Image 1: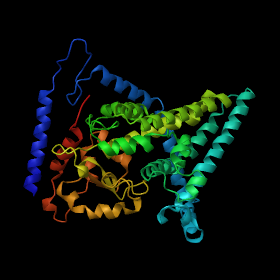
Image 2: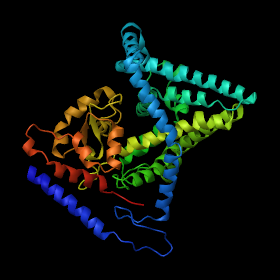
Image 3: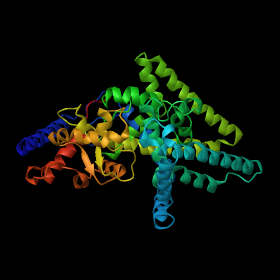
Image 4: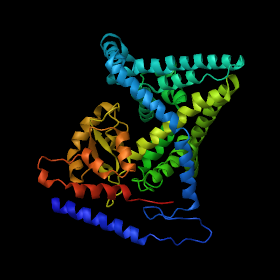
Amino acid sequence: MKKDKKNLILKTAAREICFHKKATKKTSKNTFTTISEHGQPYTFARWLEFFVGCFFFFVPLPLVVCQIACCTLWEGLDQMTLKLIKKCTQINEWCDRNLPYKKFVEHPRDTFIVNTTIWLAVCLPAYFLVDAYAQAQSLAAGNGFIWWRAAIYNIIRIGPMYRNFMYVYVLCHKEAHCHGKLFSLPYREYMGLQFVYNYFIGFFHGVIPGPFTESHIYNHHKYDNNMHDVYSTGAYPRDSFKQYLRYVYIWFLYALNISSIKKFYAEGSMDKTYRCMAGCLYYTFGLILCSKFVSPLFTIMYVWYPLIEANILLSAVNYTWHAFVDPDDHGNDYVNSTTILDAMNFTLDEEYHVVHHQYSGVHWSKHKELYKRHIEEYKKCTATVFQGTNIFVVWGMVVNKDYDGLCDYFVQYGEDKSKHLSREELRELLKARLRVTTWSH
């Protein structure tokens, strides 16, 4: 077994050497190009990806860093003092036991969604309207934009340790996969709850209708990160921050429905095309209303900034979910999707990403059971599994080429350590899986 794994390491390493030897600087004389660190020519299109990605990433970065720092500090202070987050969990548990919440949701494990939705669909939008009124009054009086109000709003919106952000996007994701059936009948119909996360709550957190409800379901899960997937990571050697910045451009094309509209139209899926277009019009109408009744600056800081901030974070999340590719089997889900056991600061078992791609519509409460059901398959191919870390930490190690750091958290199954890959073998395997590309453009 160990000999086979060593042969695999040698084979993948040889492929990498061969790839670099074949890299050439020869291009047409009309093409401005250089060679990347991985031997890829940088054509005009790739430079465009890089510079647009830099714009989306670096322009709002100081605000995003400050916001995350404040939210992390908020979490730490809360744990040392009031413990409000723990009390909120206890309230949800009490409601589950003592109130008829189960009748409002499709699955009995989802009763927490009732209080979460009250907070996200009533309380935070009400706060948004209060701030809109205060900013409009201040501007009308000639006192200018109230920056401190915008700062506090965005910190509260994202939540301690970005919990609000996490629940909004995870529930947008879950809602799309269950086709709007988080809440039970008749409540989801006469209370307008069928797509409340994607069509209403998401507006305040940078979600345009379409990326989850159309593209994620009918494109990403259909093509599974291959060249037809509109936000595939397969065209980029992932162990490079420069390549990640190129990917940011691709991600924003998806987040703004642009690449999805183009793809669905090319495939003749006009119903999906029109729904994505309608999502863009809906979001644009919201931007216009905010600009007209308050100000363009309010629109930027309260509506447009959340979209940029959230999708910077989400681009890093998806880049990590699909950072590793099996050089010998590009369709191997156990390698191509990242699993994180005992993950920090994540929710609803999203970290079982292999399970999510194998059983995309299954309820989150079954993810761990399904992971265990296929555990022998994980063992056979040295699956991409980490333990006891955060997905953003894994992303940081990937783009910084910290292969030793990745080895520290990597899970090798089996009690007999003599059958495990050595640290150097594992390091080379991870490097090969990060550097292999499955297609190019």
